[in-house]
Image 1 (cartoon, rainbow, N blue to C red):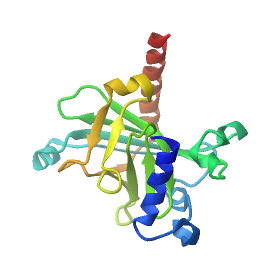
Image 2: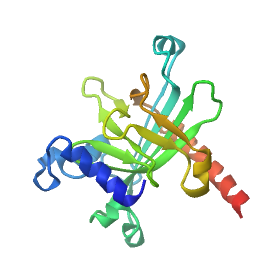
Image 3: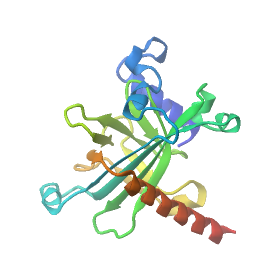
Length: 211
């Protein structure tokens, strides 16, 4: 998702509830909800995942997603990075990055999407190059649970490791009948770090073939 489009995505989340950023209440201040979900800290990270069992998939026959992993990361920005990121361009010295991995019915390959997250009255995570995005909701009645939503402002997310040539093999995950909201649970960081390592290796391999 382009930085301009990502900015629109975040501001639309706020305006959809009639809340202007300039008059937002404390909980709706930029990044307040993200900081509540993942408090800032040196290399702060959170991992959420779910593998849908056969009983669930039988009950939801139109659901395409069989596995999902969501990796959220906080990082401080250097002076150079501030000029290149959505967060830095809006006066922040930090950013929240995400990686989402999913497996679909009948597919053996893991699909990936990644980008930057922001929040006002809601938490939005967007993919660059106009790749859509997801919203995040923590479940107050279920500690450790996270809802990954495709049913609000953006109804799709493009699953591809990057922009440019990588888009040729992209798969678009849309908010279908049974693919609108995914309830994930807090999981060991090792799971997400392993997922990220696999993605990094894939990107490295693709970079090597492009040389």
